Amino acid sequence: MKKKNNNSNLFWWILGILFIIYIGYLMALESGYYQSKVAQKTLLTEEKIEEFEQDIKEGKELDIKDYVIDDYKDYSSPLSKAGQQISLGVENFITKGIGKFVSVVSKLFT
Image (cartoon, rainbow, N blue to C red; front, side, top):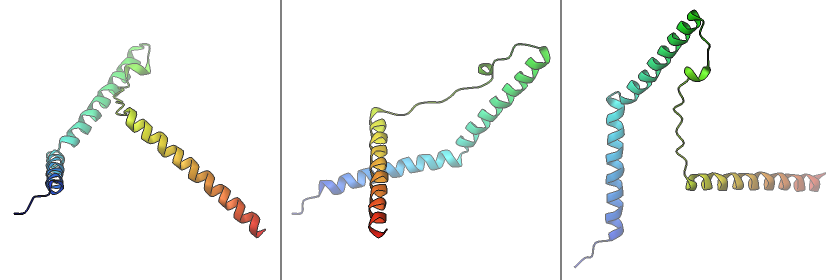
């Protein structure tokens, strides 16, 4: 009797979940969900421009905070911040290492 490999089952489950996520994104793209979100932001911007122009005509005191919509969302987590710090550390190490290597090689040939 053959035993089924649990790793194989796990692979197919992960592949199936990724496929379902892909289909969901594809449906959202094809249905125009993203385009409607962009169009909605554009409409809000046009409304704020008209409000700004109206306030200028009326001579009201203007403040940029009244017209700019700040919808920045910070999706970072401690893990992503740690990954970024590690990445910067590796980049600096490699950059300095290559710089020292080039200076040593240039001293050898000069």
